[in-house]
Length: 352
Ligand SMILES: *Cc1c(COP(=O)(O)O)cnc(C)c1O
Image (cartoon, rainbow, N blue to C red; front, side, top):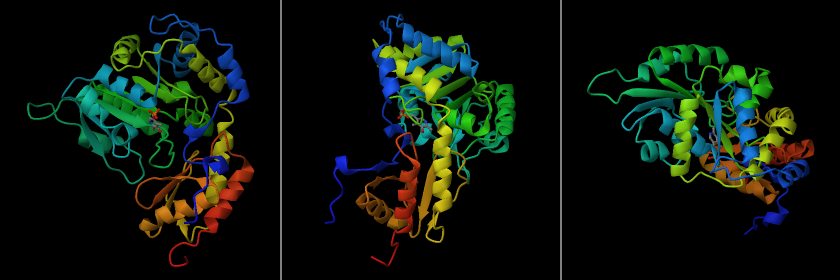
């Protein structure tokens, strides 16, 4: 046994951008936050966060919730009924990583559209939307994800997002965006959050990823949708009392830790460019902060992860033959160079 490093020995954690810990300035903001009881609706810091996010995303209202999963699931619950059809891309977080919640919590039927690169266009969605007849689940909603996690942090082309929205709305359907990493699209493209959110009825954004806050997501939408989501949040067990302590960290993150996402993007790009691509393929454009390595042969992915871990580097398996790395707030440029060196030293198959 080579022995995997103890937690305390781990030097570089790129499993996710969720591993980011509160910075000293963020802790200070949490410590001095004015709080109330948010279930009773009078926590001033939560109210301020909701207003600020609604304003930045150009929506009428917003709701602070414990997780991105709850935020997405509230969007479904508030805007669909049992038996409805929801169309989304096959790699969507809502479908892959939310524990089967759409079936359990909303009773909806998902139609998952496979793509080569995570990017849906209207013709694919149109073909997947059920006809209105007695045989089919009635279509209710189309969901997109920007950036697209499973596709490697891909940025959705905004022109297609807009075009699809017009068609979705022309059919009377709701249009939801899982914008867990919408900040990254904003920082990478310079397009305002308001413009990115405009085509959608509802938008979910996460604070516990690259922005570095410890807890929480916000769902933004029209007032009626948020009123319904508010009721279901309580039902799902997502009502929190002195949540202002957490909301303060989110406000701090938006004001002080958003622009630095470009550092994470530069680190992901450096990782991509530094790799010896003869051995380790990255089969997607590195648009933002996510690098997914395709390992050949696929069964060697655990060997690559073990090799990294022996050097104190943590990444995650992202399905058979795939290893995901996300440079984040905790990583320096020197860390990135160490990760590149470790990856390029991987003996690969047949050499160990
Ligand atoms: C992380 C993530 C979420 C929400 O995850 P939680 O762990 O529930 O906060 C939703 N969508 C995408 C694309 C994500 O990456």
